[in-house]
Length: 401
Image (tube, rainbow, N blue to C red; front, side, top):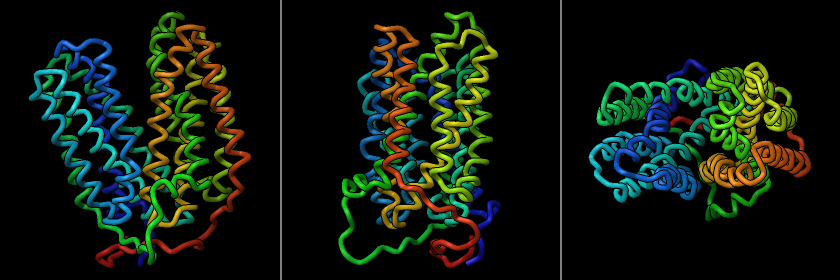
């Protein structure tokens, strides 16, 4: 098999699938709440509609990952992306909140299907000595989509109907689905004997410790994206949207650089320092009363979160057998969504009762606890220089990547 190349058909198609898939997803993030309100939904129902998607995606993601381990990643990626074409069109045909609840659950299941398979596919594709680099670059497709599509979705509904918006979302998902069809499936050899259960895989140190570290950081992310748009205007920072622009740019740059650094230095040597930077960024947020200082924190927040998340992902892959990666990564990535939800639903009441500074200090403490736990519970790993380590998995048709 030929050496892995970033400009290979498989890697380009995987990045394109990720970009368009999340483009369809992000088109609906700022607009679906308005659609629910247009159907007569209350603020509480808006929260339920958005939350059911996340709940469905989180609960079954490890199970879908296990299916990918057994039957192949490409089939599940294509299934999830294909269903993403369907559900925006379903939304356009609904006339009540009740059916929308069911549609959001189905949409969330499609999301779980795609994410569990795609994270394992790119892990299988990347050679061990470049795994951090490959995962870091691949994950920027999501961030670029996040930087572009929410604003586009908001612009669409200002001059067009929701039917047009949902059609654009479906067409964007269709582009992602076509990209999954271009992928060559990767054959993962399963060892003889019964496979371990999903729970047994999740309880392993190599999976559980990084998952809890991710959760501790994701809570701060959930608090920032949910409540910064409320806090900043109250402090006279009108153009706070620049925070998210600077955050996105910093995240993209850091993911490319940190992934390569973790291949050379070891995952833990990259994860721990950047978790320290994230702790400082979150802990300093209550002191942000000017746009300049807020943008400095956006840089810190972006480079820290952008660096350690894909590196944690690579660490889980390093320590998990290929035949169990789908289940392991399904469990690990679910903690991102769980943490974001906790950041808005659990930390929010703290802000209401004790003030927003207390909320961000609490988020900072959670990051610090996750940092200390990870540093103590996770042994140091080895750098991966050169072309050693484990051989890359085989492509089913026998051709090179």
